[in-house]
Length: 278
Image 1 (cartoon, rainbow, N blue to C red):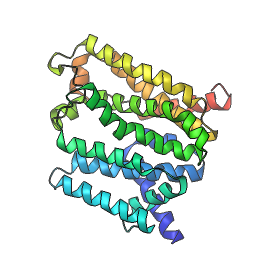
Image 2: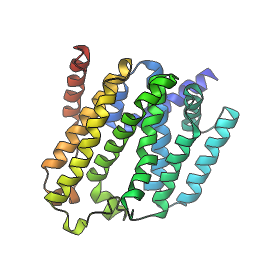
Image 3: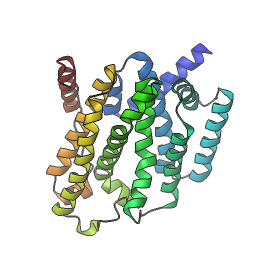
Image 4: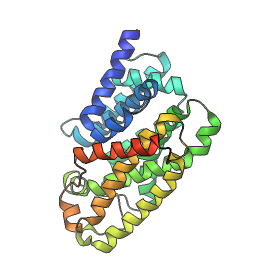
């Protein structure tokens, strides 16, 4: 069983490496036990997201329901033949991740199957809570290692960071969401008339969440502070690029941060961390 568990964690690590350079680089800064757990969380949320966003030729509702039932079975029995779910359920058990966080995440995934337009800010925030905020809380459970007091103290900043990350992703993926998936998350904006003023308003909202989140990053324990700071630098840089990009280009192209620059941001985070400037 030890070999099987080790292999399942390695599969989740491989998923992170193949799907997200920035997440992979930042997570590799964690100590080994935390790293394995965070990769297992990423593997779980990535597969669920892939079901919803890319498995177009298949019955997505059936697939996500089967995936959820397999997880429930794994949590009940302590084992799964699905490697991603096996590593994830081990993490859920080890760090006492509440099922309500997982349930909220799956609820948001299912919302994407039912909705093409999020009609109000409340609907958007409900979606963001499940798709991002609770993922931040799952990671925080790992970082605080069952310290309930620390977890409760850092909950709000962790949720703000998850929300900011997700909204940057929304802006980055406007073209893919609107034209590829026929999906609109920002109901307050007419994207046929998306202009500098509308973009500036969104950027200001996201930057406010980043500012609140930074206060929590400063208080994270050990190497989790370094890892999350690296991810924070990456997303701040991505937001800045979006801010400097003309609205129509944001609408028609996927803005990204080059890999070489991600390495520079990682080095910056390491220097700040080593010099105890955070």
